[in-house]
Structures are given as C-alpha cells and as structure tokens.
Amino acid sequence: METNAGCRLNGSGSGMITLEDLESFPNDQDLDSACHSHGSGSLEEDTEPMEDEQDRLLHYWQDIGRVHQVDVPTDMAVPIQQLTTNNHSSAAREKVPFTLITRKDKCGEILYEKRHYEKAKWACIPVQEEKYEQSICLGFMKLMRYICEQNSSGSYLGMTIPIVTVVRTEQSRSLLSREVIVAYHLPAQHQDHPPQPNDTDIAIQEWPASIIYTRSFSSVTNEGSILNEINLLVEALDMPQIHMEDSFIVAGYTNPAAPIRSNEIWVLHRQ
View 1 (tube, rainbow, N blue to C red):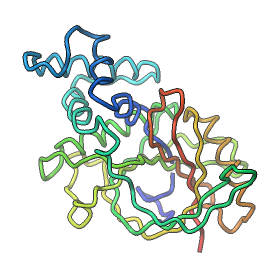
View 2 (cartoon, rainbow, N blue to C red; view 1 turned 120 degrees about the vertical axis):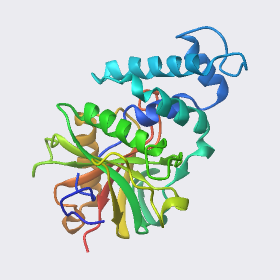
View 3 (cartoon, rainbow, N blue to C red; view 1 turned 90 degrees about the horizontal axis):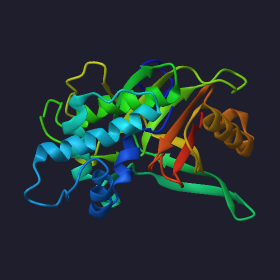
View 4 (spheres, one colour; view 1 turned 90 degrees about the vertical axis):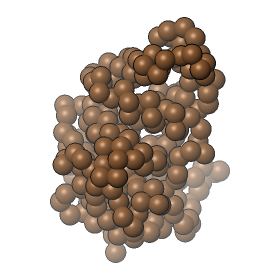
C-alpha cells in the first residue's frame, strides 16, 4: 500500500451511513421493525409494493443522514434497497482477507495486531466536506451506486467489510485534514477484472501487499475519537519507523449508530 497521491492509502475512515444501515438490518425481523416506523405492514408480505419498501428504507436513511447533516437524495432509493436486501446477515458480507502475524496484549487487552494483507484492487473516492462524518456519508453513497449496478457490468457486485477511510493528520496528530479517501475492497470474484465505475470520481486502484498494524475500538467515528485512537495506537507501537507519516486508516465493520461498534485504526509498516 503506497502513500502516493491519488486514491491509494494516503488519507482514512469508516462508513457512517454505509455500515450504519447494513448493520441496522442484521435479519429480516429487524429490517421489518425498522421500516414499521415509516409505515405499516411487513416487508415480507407478497402484497407489499416494491415502491413502498424503497420509500420506507429511503426515509430511514434520510433520518440518519440528517443527524450527520447529510442529504440523502431520492435516487439512492434503489441502491439502499439492493444493499438492504442482499446484506441483511453478516454472512452476506465478504471480509477483506489477511494473515495474522502476531499480536501484542497487556493485562488481557489486545494493544494491536500485526497483519499481512495481499495486494488487491479497491474502488476509492476522495471527498472533502466540512465535517468528517459528512465526507464519509457522501463518499460511501457514491460507492453504493457503483456497487449497485452503476458499473460497466450493470450488475450488483456484492458487499465487503471493512469499508475504509484514509485520513491525514498534521505532525502533532491533533487535527484531521478535511479531505479523506473512502475505499471499498472489490469482492474476490471481481479482483481480476473489476467492473469500471460509471462515476468518473471513483478510481480502481491496486494496493500492493502490505504489513498493517491495527487497533480495535468501539465508539463513534468522529474527529475526536479518531485522533484519540490514532495516538493510542502510535503510543502502543512505540516504533517511529512504523508510522505511516501523516496518514492513517479507519476501518468500519459495524453500525456506528449501535451502542457497541466495531472499528479499527490501521497504520502501515514502512519498509
């Protein structure tokens, strides 16, 4: 994973709306319950019109978007419905593969893991909004459209986790840059021949094999929590040659709106 300009690993982050909504619907019962807040009846009933299902899901996402000061446009209705239908269980989401090299713990707490990630192709997009959460939401919505048929194959590509965001900090690691890069790992079946995005803002990049140090955390992903977790990981490593200059990665696995969230900070091992 290089730190060149462009859409390689040189910026950070997790998906605010993205996995927020995928993980908000872990099974059919939860999906039905969530959508009842915007209408009556079950999504599993054959008599329920597709338009009503899409409307309820869209309204649900728009409610979440308003919390983060993000407008979810009506043209997101179809991608939202597709991701919800195809990803209502964790088994439906392919995990980015890696090999665990070692881990360091203290008093039963895992301070960090050292992993090896093979080279792989990622779809990534740079975003620069006033707030971190806004950039993550808007970046992922663009990636959602790519995943949900707005690509050269015209097919649904499948969801992978984590969604990562590359973030940059200044030298003291007390401020995040406004520009981030939101990235989606292509599923295994599309690695050799990735469908091209219709959106020219999205680039397909091959990230080289890398050694990554990771630290897990369970909290919201905003500027304050990310900077805190970055500094905790750097302190735990205590090896300046490992630090990825001013760039770090936030990886999001679960719903940021849930009481317990699963995220990671990643740092690239510099050779």
